[in-house]
Structure formats: structure tokens, C-alpha cells
Length: 477
Image 1 (spheres, helix red, strand yellow):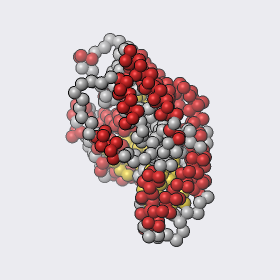
Image 2 (cartoon, rainbow, N blue to C red):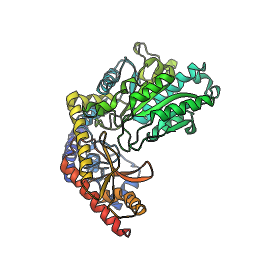
Image 3 (cartoon, rainbow, N blue to C red):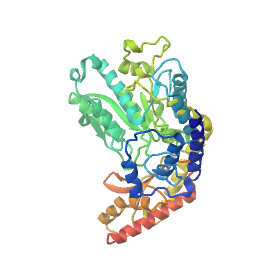
């Protein structure tokens, strides 16, 4: 182990220097073609190499070419800077390397605790066993919708696990126009079909319309279909909009439908006292998907699904072959009975370390800082005559566009479509783009790094304006 001990110390020093120096480097730069080709063309080694040499190669060939998400001026997608405590937790978990499917070992019990912690942070009811960690919210959504489908089938007198989808009448689900693509993927993978995942109209800010939802449900029932599911958003990925969760929950209660809330990005916004009122009704859902690897900064991968009824989750997924029987599993059984994964990584240690390092107060402070900075970004955008804020800032996402007066609409769409890449390549900040309702091309800045400051926001605004002006001129404006 001497080789490991020496190389491990060198690796920690290397990573500490990397994290400490992020703010002094470009946020992101395109890889040098030679460096890219070197990684792509690596031959399979014939003989092994020493650990110290491997650490040196990581420092030379990998760390200099980051995605950029650790930098305080990275505002792209919903990718977090890694929490240092989580990095250490991930290292220790890798050293133990268990399968966290079940049994009587530390990772299993720690997962039950951190799932309860996540539920407490989000304000979601949590009976024991009512949730598990997943690879991300995409898998959490599949698990939740699978449980919803199973419950709907049982109400119709069908065991869908035994008889399959052919024994069911057409089931129908509903999701807002701004819902995440993972919802459609889950519907397709579960055999529901994207055609029977209805798109509920949204208002201009991206909120699902509860009145339209009610009308669509009535129309589908009249047509002989079986509504069973509604998916609402606690922070859409385009604008951070939070649906009227109480109103949607009212509809679901009246119609006896499963309410799933996608809180992958935004659910932890409930910890900000300013934003918290928007989340009224989140605790009424049947299931909630969250991503600790987003706003909490837990190193990827780590999602979480929480459910109101643990028995329903287990009924949908439990399958214990004889070789996996374990008398030490206890009354709650194995985690593999509550979802799809059998061999499961030790995710809970990095979650425990990340949450424990900050505590509830620290996490709430960081969330509130990010939402305050996003509102400030909205103000800075509003103050510039050549920028246009496209939606109210509700959580920590600001969607806006470069729109100097007098420029033709078609030209502005072309400018704003190319603007994110132009900003990225300049290296001083990083944003991504999206298309909002009505086909409007937009720049989208997501703030989930608590290290962000107002000077960082001013750099973002200046870079968008400068790159926008260059693009406009280049395109003939």
C-alpha cells in the first residue's frame, strides 16, 4: 500500500490546487486538437503503470480541460461545483466499494438517514422506507412513474407486473409544456407512449395551467381513456418557474390521480424564505424527484426519489430471488426492492458529507444567496437597453436575450441562437441557450454555485452584450 499512500497524497494535493485555482483560469476553452486526439487515441496498455505516474497523467491530460462547472462564473445548464466534503466522501466510498442494494452494513443505514435528511430539507413527508438514492432525477422519475402505473393498474384490477400493458385500458398522464424531457422518456420506457402523455398549456412564464389540466382530464374521461398521473414542476429548467402546486394538487385529489413533482433542480429553493411561498403544496405530492448533485453540490451522480407510500413503491419493484434472501435485511427489506438497480453504488456517504459539512443553516444560506444573485442578475439585465428579460426570476434561473432596438426579429433570433457558444469561447463566463414558448431564442443563466458574486454577474452581462454586438455586426445588423 505504500504506492497507494504516496500517490494518494499527491492526488489530494493535485485536486486541492485544481479546486483552489478554478477562479483564476478561463471558465472553459475548446480543447487543443492535439490534446483531444491524445485522449481519443490512447492505446490499450500492455503492461501496468505505477499509481504516481497515473496521477501525474491526470494532472497533465485531464484536469487542464474541465467542463467549467466548478468556476463561479459557470452559469450553464444545471451543473454544480463539487462540494469539497462530497469529494472526500466519494473517495472514501470508492475505497469501501460495497453494493448498496441491502444488508446490514454502514452504507445501507446511512442511505436511509440521508434520504430522510433530503425529505426534511424539502419539507416532504417521509415515512421510513419511502425513498432511495438514484443515479439522477431521470431514474428517479422512472421509479416514481413506475409506481404510479402500478397503482393505477391495481385500481383497474390488473397486476401489470404479471399481465403486462396489454391487459390495461389506455392510461393517460399530463405534464406541463415546460416539463423536463426525462418525463417523456419515462413515459416511453414504461410503455405508456408519449402520445398519451398530454402536454398541458402553460402561461407565458412557463407555469402549468390548472384550469386547462382540469378540462383535458374531463375530455379524456369522456373519450373512454383513464387519466392516472400529473407531473408538475418545482422549478422548470428553462426559466426556474414553479407551478401552482397547491392548485395542481387540488385537481389530483379530486380526480384521484398520482401527483409527481419534478424538483430535480428547483425543489431545494423552498429553503429560501423569499421563494418558499411558491412551493406551497409540494408536500401533497405522491412522489418527488430531486437531484442532490445539482443545487446541493454533491458530486455526480446522485438523484433521489421520495414517495408518500413506501408500500406502493415496494409493490411495484420488489423481486427477491433465492440467492439474495438475507435475514439481516430487516422489515424494510433491500433498497433494490424499491427501484430498478440491483448493484447500487455507495452514494450516501458523499451526500452525508456534503449536508453535514454545511448543516441546514449553511445549505439554506447558500440557496438564498443563489436566488438573490439571480434576482440581481434580472435587475442588471433590465437596466441594459439592449437586453430583454424574458420571464420573471422565481428561483435561480434568469432567461434573457440580446435585443437592441431596431434590429429585425429574425436577425435577433439568429444572434441569440449563436450567442451562448460565442460567450463560451471567449472564456470569461459560460452560459447556455434555450428556446422559450413562442420560439424565442434565449440566453439562460442558472446560478447554483454559492461562490457567485455580483462582479461575476456584471462580467456575464458585459460578455453577453459584447458577444451579441459582434454577432449582430457579423450577421449584417
